Each structure stands twice: as C-alpha cells, then as structure tokens.
Amino acid sequence: MNEVVEKNAPVLDFSSALVQLLRRQNPAAPAELFGLAAELAKASERGDVCVEIPAQTDIAAWLASGLVGEAGCFAPLIVSQQRLYLARYHQYESRLAEQLLALAVDAVEPPDERVLRSQLQSLFANSKENPDWQKVAVAAALHQRLTVISGGPGTGKTTTLVKLLSLLQMTSKTTLQIGLAAPTGKAAMRMQEAIRKGKADLIAQGVLPDDIAVKIPDVAVTLHRLLGSRFNSVQFRHSAAQPLVLDVLVLDEASMIDLALMSKVVDALPPQGRLILLGDKDQLSSVEAGAVMGDLCAGAGLSPQFAEQLSNLTGQRIEAGFSESRIGDHVMTLQKSYRFSGVIGDLARAINRGDLRNLSELLAASSQSENSALTWYGTNPAQYDLMGPIMAGFDDFFAAVSRKACPNEVFKAFEAFRVLSPIRNGAASVTRVNAAIETQLLKRGLRSSDQVWYAGRPVLVPQNLYDLELYNGDIGLTLPDESGKLWVHFPTADGGTRSIAPARLPAVETAFAMTVHKSQGSEFGHVLLLLPSPAEGGSGLLSRELVYTAITRARSKVSLWGEETVIASASRKGVVRQSGLAARLQVGG
Ligand SMILES: Nc1ncnc2c1ncn2[C@@H]1O[C@H](COP(=O)(O)OP(=O)(O)OP(=O)(O)O)[C@@H](O)[C@H]1O
Image 1: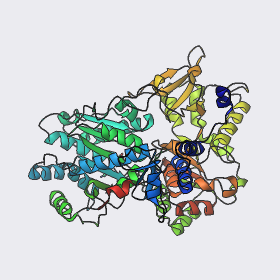
Image 2 (image 1 turned 180 degrees about the vertical axis):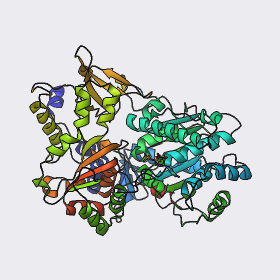
Image 3 (image 1 turned 90 degrees about the vertical axis):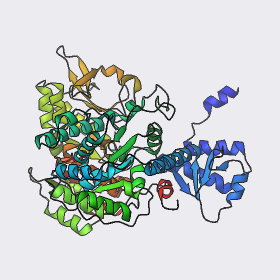
Image 4 (image 1 turned 90 degrees about the horizontal axis):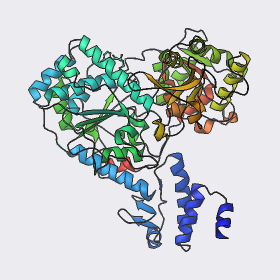
C-alpha cells in the first residue's frame, strides 16, 4: 500500500522536498527557518551558495531545533557569518577558503632576483606598456603557490602563461610536471591551441629556447578528465587522499568553474603544487552554484611591500592598492586587449562599465553593411526578418557539408558563425531559432520532415556522458560517411575528430543557436546575439555579465538584435550571487 502511495506522490521540487524533510525531522522548529530553508533551496538552483539571515533572527532557537548547526556540526543546514547554507555548500566554501589562504601564505623557493630581473627583461624586451601587467603577473607568480590572472578577451592571459611557465622551467632544478585543464572540452581545446600559438610566437621572437619549449605542455584536458571522473559518482579519483601528480596546475576559463568543482580541484592539488588560475572575472559565473572567480578577485589590491618588490623586479613603478582581500597579492589583472582594438572591444567595455552614453553612440554609429564589425537590429527589432542574415551566416558551413569536406574543415566553417540567445524557450529563443533553421533546411531540401538526424545537424551535449567521454557543452556535427550513413563527429585533443553513432546520443540538442551560458569558453568569428524584450520574456535573465560574455565570444563581428532600452538596462544590472567566499578571504574574514 505504502509503495502505491509513494508511486502516486507528486514529484516535489527541491525547495518543497527540503522543507518536507526538515519538517519531518522537527515539526516544531521555528516557522521562519522553514521559510528561509525554502528560499535557500530555490536560491541554490539559481546559483547562490547561501542566503543571508535577517538581522533580528533568533539564531539560538534555530540551533536548538537541531536542523541547523554551526560550522563543524553535523546538521542539514549550517549557519555561518549570518548566512544560511546547505551543509555541503558550506563544506565546499569553508574548505576552499581555508585551502586558498593556506596556498597564499605558503612560501615557494624564491628565485634569484638578479637572474629573474634579467630574464624578465629579455622576455618582455618588446613591451611598450608601463606598467606592463603581463610582466608584473609573471614576476609575481614566480614567488607564489597561488596566482589568479584575470583579464578580458585578448589581454594576453595565454601569452603571459607561456612566459611564466618558461621562467618556472628555467629556474627549476628539475623538470616541472605541468598540468593544463579547462572546465569544458571546447575550452580545453582553445587553451591548447592558444598555448601552441603562444609558444610558436615566442620561439619566433627568439625568447623561448627549444629545450625549454619542450618542457611546456601543449595538451589540455577537461577538469573532469584531469580529476578522473567515475561513472555515476560525484567523487573523483584524485582528491586530497590521492593527489594529482603535478608540480604546477593551470586552469583556464576559471570563471566557469563552480564552487564544488573548484573545491575538489584544490583538494587534489599535491603538497607544494602551484595553482595558476586564468579567467575573466567580468564574465558570467559558473552554471552551477558559486561565483568563485569573481570572489577571488573581489577587493584585491597589491600590498605596499609586494608592490615595491615587483617594482624592483620589473623596473616599472607598481602602485600598491588598498586591498580588502588576504589574497590581494595573488590576483593580477591584465588591462590591455591586444585583440579587440575596434568596436567590439569598445562595446564590451561600455557594457561592462554601464556607460550608457558610449553604448548609445556605438549603437547609433553601427551599420548594417556586411563588412561592419557591429550590426544593430534595434529600431523595432520585430520588423526584421532575421532568417536571411541567419541562413547567410551559415552559408559556408552548409557549403562545406554539401561538398562533403573533411570534418575538421566543416568544424572550422561552423565556428565562423553562431546565434546566441539568453533564453531556451519563447520568442527569440534558442529553441525557436533552431526550429526555424530546420524549417528552412526542409525548404531547401537539405533534410526531410521526419528526419531528426540529417547531414549538417550540429548538436550540443547537455550533460556529462562519462561512458562516451563527452561533457556538458561539447558540440558535435552530424556528417555522412562514404556510404551515406550518419555519424556525429566530436573534436579530439590531438586536433582530429572522433565519430559516434547518433543512436548513442539520445538527449542532445540542435545547436545552430545556443544559450549564452553554453557559449562560455568558445569563440566564433561572427556572433548574432538575440536580446528579447521584457514582453518577449527575456529581460529577467539579461545582465551586464551575460551581454558582455556573449559579445566577447565574437572574433570579428557582432550582430545585435534588441532594443536600446533592453541593452542599456542589461548593462546596468550586474548579477550578484550570494556567496560567503569573498568575505572569508577578506582581511578579518
Ligand atoms: N604584450 C603583447 N604585445 C603584443 N601582442 C600581444 C601581447 N600579448 C598578447 N598579444 C597577442 O594578443 C592575442 C591574444 O593573446 P592571448 O591569446 O594570450 O590572450 P588571452 O587573454 O589568452 O585571450 P582569450 O581571450 O582567448 O583567452 C595574441 O595574438 C597574442 O599574440
């Protein structure tokens, strides 16, 4: 009988399920506690790590209920620093903060300052910046176990990394084992391509000797692969008990790494291992809970002693900053973009700063000519039939599919253009655009109406599929073999592709258009960004970080579809994720 009741019971959302569980444990607990627990569950699904507890709350009564404990207690909910946490998030956050602070104070063998000064001089001989923050970041990292390098697109994070790794190898008595990883397959692939290019550039400039270059790896893996994911388990093979066998771990696209994963990576770092994080603190936070990169960079500034040491090493005047953070000396921000000198960079900056006047001028000056780097469909966006520009954007891709070009070539053509939207459903959404494109393909005879799989169907993997070694966000392209049989090709780390039968991929989504969140860690030649108005249901999701992230995915062209008021209000709205990590890293935290 019980079984029947269970089977027919409605499926509860997380919030109701949590409250039900807590009520079962102690029905007499304070009503406000159940209320805030429900809010906490909902907030955690939005990406918050905790919620603030109202000032007048009788926390003693909550603790007496047995449902809430203080740090270190065994209870479903934890109260800490006037915040309420789900126990596991509290564990991740407090442990990560402790480990980062320990890494920050842990000394490394200091390099010979005289030698380092001359090595920096030769590596940055062509530098025209003063101060050159790339040089400062390298000089700082040589003295640290923990270094965070934040910078917008094209600010030279990878270039800086290659110089840093070469100096680490040059100054080490033994060859250092260096691991390179990124949160998604796409990001790992981009990381290794950028490192290969960075190495080649430095070799060509004559500042990276061949014997050092070979000691800098140029193969990057996903974080899940690095840590050793296990089938059906959230635990990894590598942890504090079985640390990674590495001297230096570099993580790219750190803004995409959520609290739980970051905590597990740092856990798996071996004693004496160095951690270097690269990312852009202004981008969207991770899909899962936390805002780790933003929290690590919050309130950071250089201490007077370290600023002076860096001034001596770099021969440049480095100002100390007022730091609220205990890891302020470990956070380096690269300022100058070497990629975006034109309108895309200006637009990204205007959005980031909420500079509405500049934004308005840039939009007004945009043109709808093919060659313009910024096209704006803004005056009454609904009047535009976007299918023309969208299909034109995929012209080269469809041509490559039709002439049965090799998978790598088809991938290259696909990377040239992408439609991005903040929303999955509704007008101007990912689903709507993908369906409209598939209708066009039907009209052009490139697929038949009953065909889910067709030559040229791009697909996105929406979750980790460990048995297939595919990860959330991976993109595959459906292409026929010589006999006409369809296979889905995925890029591999060695620059090739591997193919999987469509039948093994039941849950994938068509990916001509994708959400801005899923586009993180990728880059496309031309991005067409759809920004739905409040009436179209998109405004709640729009934020400065989202528009900035979307725009900076574009290498050479951005097409923007949305009213100026929508873009302006997004750029005024920063996303604040509730988290206690920044506070734990703060002076006195
Ligand atoms: N100091 C510099 N002087 C001149 N060009 C530079 C400098 N630093 C980087 N670049 C060039 O700028 C481009 C972007 O550099 P890099 O790939 O290192 O940036 P990034 O911040 O890693 O970019 P991404 O946004 O892709 O993560 C490269 O072509 C690189 O050669």
